Amino acid sequence: MTAEQMMDDFSIADVITEDLIQLEMKATTKEEAIHELTRLLMANGDIADEDDFMADVFEREAEGMTGIGNSIAIPHGKSDSVIKTSLVVGKAAMPIPWESLDEEPVRVIILFAVKNTDANTMHIKLLQKVAMLLADEDFIENMVNARTKAEMMELLSKDPMEED
Image (cartoon, rainbow, N blue to C red):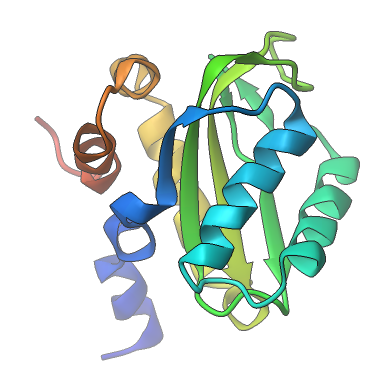
């Protein structure tokens, strides 16, 4: 199987578990939100160093906004401290101020943790799959309204290429 075929078979479900979903985030700022989600990655064994990973995420944040509108932000860090490329998803109890395309705060944060060795392949594929999901207004509304980790996992596990 070629690397390209492996990427075609790749699913968002391959890089997230219920342990990487936080439905009741306590964070009230972007910095707190990224730190809270980074702690989940650390606890799950997906990153080796919290501080190094967060430094890489904030370096990327400085390059351009990751608030994509519709209450969603997609910060990401490509880092040597990432052990396993993963997604961690947080849902804020209250909207969090975030530089965003629609200048609105965010409620759902999808933090990408990408291993440097995966940066050119998996990172792009992961962004593409998430972007395809986020192009669906129903998907966004369902994410913002998800009440359980199982609901969130089901949403994220949906193949954006398949029609209902």
